[in-house]
Length: 216
Image (cartoon, rainbow, N blue to C red):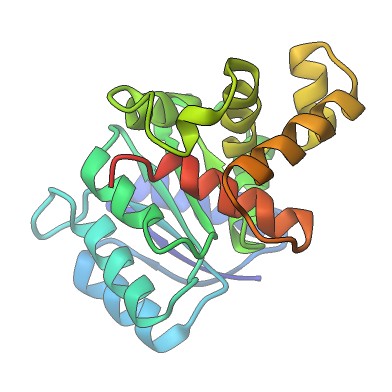
């Protein structure tokens, strides 16, 4: 699996390259500036992009803006954002096209290699990998939007855990209930969000995107 990595801090960039290579990822490019990222995403067409939000030359939201532009040019391009902060406006824009293959992790909350690599793989496969803190901030001002307002508190809890990329088994373990109960909740969620019948993985992504994109 080919990765384009964008991170301006040398030690962190080098560490991420070594980690990804240790798990059999191919580093198509490891860049440190916005223009380099745009060039790499356009010319190399990676399987997934791992992008720091703040890159030179602006050191503001250069990385995320480059990723958004690349995703508009190539819909569905998997992008995993790494950041020190939650950039709410651009995080919502990243989620807005509904194609899946998105993730947003806070650097200081990635605690081990397996957690990070699992997130990269899930995003590359078209799923989602959202830090719980990001989810809470995106939802902090939007708790009654329709059709999400029709969800019960338990269904919203299940959907929040889905947004973190957890399976039904993992959600059941977290909530100390049976997998069958979680399957029933997910079916109710799909129905209330009006998601068409398709494979469950696709509907999970659509449900999560609807959940995270509320407020648009």
